[in-house]
Length: 340
Ligand SMILES: Cc1ncc(COP(=O)(O)O)c(C=O)c1O
Image (cartoon, rainbow, N blue to C red):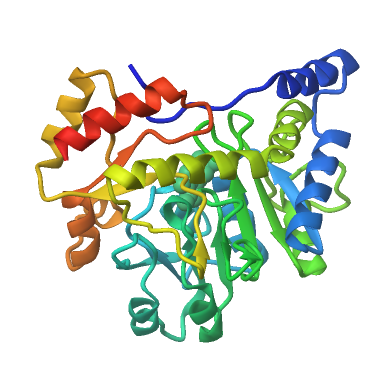
């Protein structure tokens, strides 16, 4: 079976892992600090903190913004429940926004949902394609940019992850770069990041307050750092596969001059029955999936999200990753072309 996602693990990544294991220093230390420095340099952050997951990164960013019970945070409905969870961890209330046809949060919906209780908007760049940051940052509410799916993508040459008050990343196994599980939060504002670092660890504190153990181990950090040095290679490989797929199967996210996606997902819209395509493709050895398992409004039994509903009915996602072989790629094209 050709899997829907597969990490690209090179000898270099394994050597980094092996070196950290041999060193005996496996908890958060020099490797985690090096990963943070590498992200701060690449994204012009005043400071970064490597953490145990993208969800932890979101939680800490919200806490550093002092978000609490009684506040509202706008999130898109069309994304995994990590965002909903992070908002609820703080006691604040999530306000769900519909998305545009490319899967990204719709700035017009966001504007209509804003109240005096709105304290932040979380903006994921979905499927590797940047959201409309230029419009969203003008609304005057802190934006937490969620680049979990889109590290390496850019808007007019400016990296996604450099627009918001905070940026978060995930290094889960399917992501652009991985260390199994992991995340990172960064911001230009060093003071806010001091608060993030303080809350991410409970030990050696002068005074007590409720804190978290969200640290990333050096085992994860060494691996993630090695993967980060390969990000350019990964993004290029994904774009090349996307260009070859596009000859036969048009993507929902075309390569344009303005937004430069990294094709975390190759999403296709179809008029055919999505469930039937998925099961027929599986029977032929290709794992095609829905790009999103279930939107937040469906979990919460809420209505009124027509674009998200339409995307759930019509979208599929093809295997696309740097470790996809030429033979596998041809097979995906053959099977998908016939079914779509
Ligand atoms: C857009 C987005 N944000 C946040 C997360 C949460 O990241 P993690 O699984 O590392 O907690 C994910 C999923 O991995 C995601 O796709």
